[in-house]
Amino acid sequence: MALTPEELVAISDLEKATINDSGVVPDWLMPAEIRGSSAPINSIPYPQHTIDVFGGLLAGSWSLKFQNPLQRVVCDLEIYHGENAPLSTPPDLSALQLTVAGFDKAVIFCPAKTATDTAPDNYLNLAVSGITPKYKLGGKRRFLEQSGMVVIPLTMILLSTQPLTNQETNRALSVTLKRKNESQLNTAPVISGMVYSNPLPSARDIAQAS
Image (cartoon, rainbow, N blue to C red; front, side, top):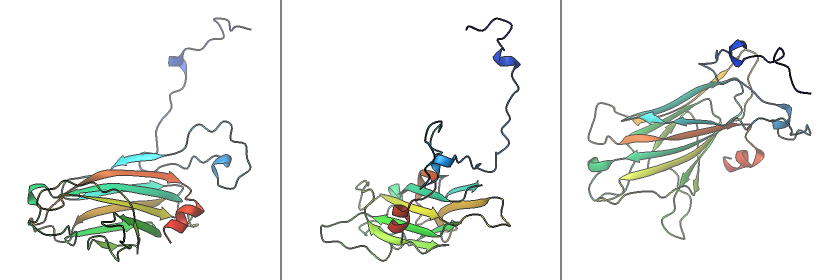
């Protein structure tokens, strides 16, 4: 039966919603979103993906607070040396420091150069703190030729697999990439990229980073 004019409510008359989670990504998990759940999947609005820009010039950073810290974060970054690229030298990231916080597992993907390559012990001498990553072959090979590799891709997956403790209301997850010595400009690449996160890392994700 059609509604009468008296039963219709104008949109402008409805109570206005407020956004009060500007500092924390809220936990909006539904029962069917939990891995292994047998709950019906109807009425799930959409997967809770977060897509952010890894902003920066000579330093890049990403940080969010999560009420649900069980997160899988994929970083697709670019390190652009441009005209400041070292001449006639192999690609090297020893001047940079990658710092992560809030994660307990990580894998960094290294593009292979030949069909017989094996996974290296580090990624172009990049220093990593806050976690001990695994290094595996893969990722993107995206670069420009100008006396060597000018654009160096950095692809990594970070996992936070520990739930909140009784003392925590949320947990900050963060990634920072910058020069070890920020006063030197001899090696000062521009850093940029994208960061993608989604909740509840799977057993496959954990195995990949172990």
